[in-house]
Image (cartoon, rainbow, N blue to C red):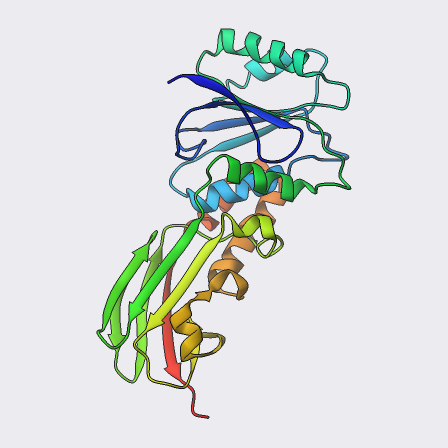
Length: 281
């Protein structure tokens, strides 16, 4: 597959990519982020790990962050990355970065490199930069998308999840086995996050009136029939899935190797029980 040089969708960034429409990290097990400043980070590495762990719980992708070094080539090569995110410092030129990339690919021919020039923190926060980078990398957007026809007692659509044991009598109820988790609450409602954080629920065929949505027995809110038919954005609600993602994020922020097994277990999606019942007004 031919490598190409392409501009990112936000200023000051460029990437050596492979042509294709899939997620850039789909076949990756080790990513090295090189050149970030711990005192003034350009990329939220913990968020990258959180996203990868919660969206791909069966695929262990290790993220290694390396500070800038006087001799970057051996520092990077010792980690044997499959993908390198190269962050240009204030005084690093494109030519210097391109020369480093050429040397690295001489040893690791299959290495894929994304290069990003420095953007001052007042113009872009670390989490926003990473979210836009993930979108450019074609990161999967869907957490889960479910559409149910209550009148016909059938599942019309279920993406990235499995809907089981659907009932539609006095209340509409079902169990749902999701394959991934949403982004954590700290960044879930930003405009950049919305591009890679789709978690929608539609229920059609209800009678007129207002309905209470519960997940695992916890009330998520009350919605009119028309709202449920149009679709509820679950990323805006304090769902059990969101709380689980927040737990993974908290463990990631500790950056402790001893926590690795714990956060990998915490990232595994769980089965959740949904119910939509009419509210007596």
